[in-house]
Length: 89
Image 1 (cartoon, rainbow, N blue to C red):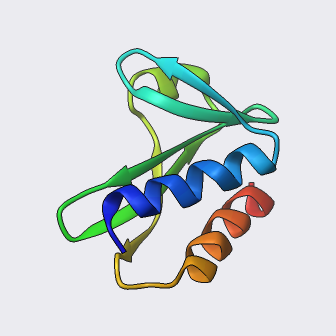
Image 2: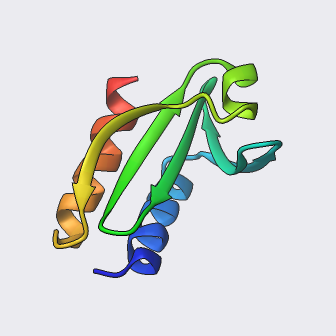
């Protein structure tokens, strides 16, 4: 999968779950749901879901990494990661 495909799958799932897209400085585009803040970061050879329950930390890119994931996974596995993050927190 490409970075863009991962991003689209994650964002569609966040929307389905009722999350709202917000812009936070310095962090940029994030998602918020039930007081939690989430971000999807795509890097050179892996991507990661990040979260925090603190708006100030979210604004200053103080997210916690959940788990580094490779790009060579299926759509179902991407959705599983998003679902587990939302349910976990």
